[in-house]
Length: 231
Image 1 (cartoon, rainbow, N blue to C red):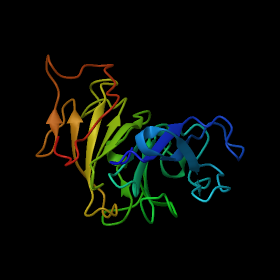
Image 2: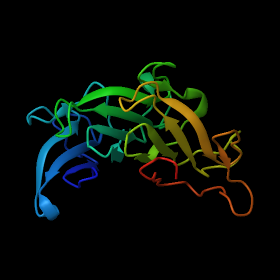
Image 3: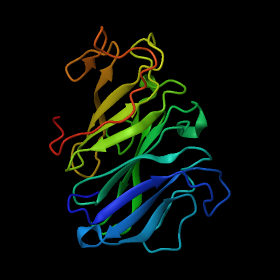
């Protein structure tokens, strides 16, 4: 939901997309009437969608079984959307099921002219651009993007990596949360600030080792940020 609960984005598996790819995943965009009395499907984002005015065709950016839409979140106005594909294989499909996040912008809070602005994952972009390469942080089957959350302004984001093995890969499938900032509300200069999980250290990281922390197989699943992005 956006803050007024009159805009809604919903991810789904998309077993039968307009094109021939199998289960690439998609996101439906809805407008809602007062008190959630009714919902209107105004567009879809995914593989081959182009018939509705709010549709966004990402066929060149999606592959079969990416599960795009596993994680979705809107900023408070509904003008910024983040969507994850936890089984995506990185740029040029070189790293199996590492996962990725797509950054999508609209011209306004009515889902107008949606466009893919950037991507975060293995092999994408460079420092200072609209995309971010975190290849050094991701391994095969980490499933980065199982859960995702934006703050209200859309300049802070948290993303789970369901099967992250901890710093040094010593804790199989413990899971982790990656913390990102943007320079502004336009998704400019995405930056990985820190990681929460087994063995991670640093000013913006948190080590969840020990008897009360994460253990092998915990598989961190979902994540939520408050409006200010400081909780």
